[in-house]
Length: 483
Ligand code: GBH
Image 1 (cartoon, helix red, strand yellow):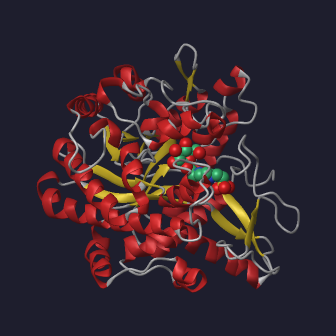
Image 2: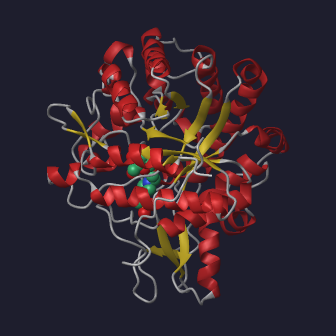
C-alpha cells in the first residue's frame, strides 16, 4: 500500500470553502439544561450502557456552555464555515406539532449563530442528526409512523426556518438516512435500537424508515421553497453517506456488477427519489420486492415537484471497500443481495492504510471515483459535509496531538477533490472535516478521536492538533490563484 499515498498538495479553487462539522448530541452536553427534553440517544445510552462503551453524552464537550470559546477557536484556525446540528428536543422538548416551544433552546442557537456571523463564519444547519425526541418514539415509534412523523417534522422545520432563516442560508434536513434506517432500525447498533426488541419486523422496518425520511425531506424542501426561500434566499438539501465500492476480483463481471449494485442500495435508495424525482432504483425494487414501500401517485408528484430545489449534494465520505458477489444461497432475510464487503481483494491487496477503526482506511482513489459517481448520476454541486478519521496509536497523547496519520489522510483526500475538479470536471464547492473536536462517538463512546482539536474529557480543555494547523495552511496554499 506504499505507492500512491504521498500528498501532492494539489490546488483548489480560490472560492472553495472549508470548515468543520459536528452534531448536537456528540458535542453539546447540557443534557437537561434550560428545559431540554430527552432524545432517543439519552435513553439508548442510559438504558443499556454497554451499547455505548459504558458512556453517554450528558456532558461530553460541554459545548452548550462554551460557544464563545469554541467559535473563537474556529476563527483562529481560519475556518470559513461551520456545520452543526440542532437538537430537536432542545427546541420542542416533547417534539410534537402541538407541543410547546422552548424559548431557551431557541436562544442557545441564536447565540451560536450570532457568534459565528460576528466572526465571519458561515453557519450550515442540519435539522436532524439522529436525536429524535424520545416523546415521539414513545407516542408512535417516530420514523416508523410516516404520517405522524412527517407532520411533526414539518412543524419543527418550519419553526427553525422562521426563527433562524434570516441568518442561516444553508440547510440540511437529515444526516445520513442510510445509517438511521439500517444501523438504527435493522442491526440496532445505533438508537433507537427498537429492532433489538422481540416483536419487531426487521424485514420491512428499515425500508419504512427510509420512506419516511424521503417524504419528510421532500415536504420540508417544498415548505422552504414555498414559504421562505424567496425572502431568505438560502439553499436546502440532504446529506447522504456511503463507502465507495471496488470489485473484489476486478476481472469478474459479477464483482464489478456487485460494486455498482452496492452503491445503488446505499446511495441510489435515497438519491434517486430525492435528486432525480424518481422511484427507487430498479435493482432495489426487484430484489426487495414488497419489503420496499411504494410511492403513491401523490408521493411521486411531490418528488417530481421538489427534486430540482435541492441546492447541493451533501456528501459524507470516509472510505472504500471491496465487494464480492457470493454464489452461496442468500439467507432467507438477506437484504444485501448476498454481497460481501472486505478491505482486502482477491490478490491479498489492502484497500489502504488502516486507521483505528476497522472500516476506515485511507483510500483517496475511491473518494475521487465517488465524487465522479455522484456527479454523473445527480449533476449537483457537491459539498463534502464530512470527511476525517481517528488515528492509530492515539491513546498516546503525543500521537494524538502530532496526528500525522490524519494529516496524510486529509492531504490525500484534498488531492482527490482537486483531481475531481480539474481533471474530471466535477463540481465540488466545499469541505467540512469531521470533526471540529474529539467527541462522543456513538456506540464507541469516547474511544475513537475524530477531532482536529483534542479534548481532555476530564478538564474539557481544547488543544488544536497538528492537523488543525495543517488544514489552515494547506487551504491558504492550495487556494492561491497562481494563474
Ligand atoms: C458519520 O457517519 C456520522 O455522521 C458522525 O456522526 C460520526 O461521528 C462519524 O461518521 C464517524 O463515525 O458497517 O463498515 O459501515 C459515518 C457512517 C456509520 C460509517 C457506521 C461506518 C460502521 C462500519 N458510519 N459505519 S460499517
